[in-house]
Length: 320
Image 1: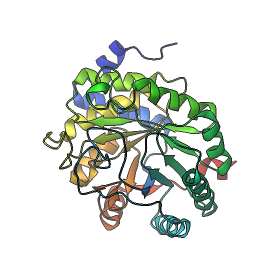
Image 2: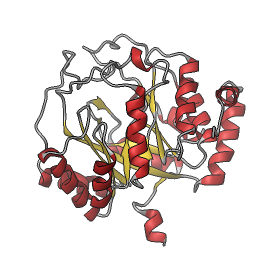
Image 3: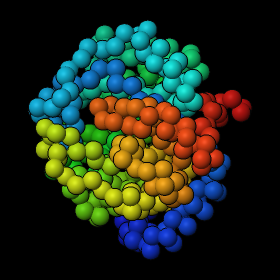
Image 4: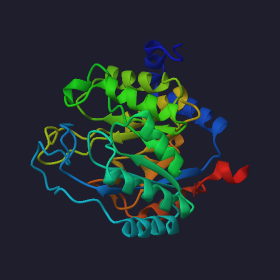
């Protein structure tokens, strides 16, 4: 059954901005502890050489970019990064590996070991590895994974303008496998791909009407990368970001809404507006996959200034 119609979401999205933010802030306060932020650290354990043709991505082998293909990181190096992230206040450690789909091979076995090791450090663990089947999702759950990220990226209608090597339904099938295993879904998208406002509303409609709404929703602004088809796209402004965050907050009241790619060009004032609109998560660290991200020191300054605190890792498990 449809939780939200496109018409309802469109009406929310198109409200006067200050009214929209006021309402989304009220929804946020009803569902979360004010000022508590889920801090994520993303580590790419295998980068570049991807056979996909995602128009925004520097890791695609179809495009000539500055990213060079790398072998998978060693387990000990990943553990060191996890310890460093924990010391810097990270809530959730996200393991990323490029590729179309998860394959049952040595690399997947290595990722399962990484999940166990990071969880043993007392951190929540998320993975983003591409498409996966129910059995693989079950193995990740058994290894201690908390959430699996698989973004829908945009609307169903606009999707094939951005990616042709997999379908929108492929994305939804992976999210169904994740949900069926009992893992939390992390799924959002990107604005600034050349899509219309209707496409943004369509993306939120897809996410808000999943059988189980995502536990976390990353909202990314396109970071145009030289060598990709979208290298000349204009950056979206903060007002567009605020509409997405506020509408996501109202339509998915219990989801963690994350400011993701594009945060490095946002001022503290702009990020503060995002938190007022209902965002309650960020990616920390100085790199987000292959694009820049604010330095740890800058985020610490912002947290102190705004009175924000990182949510403790595994908070729900610890409170039981």
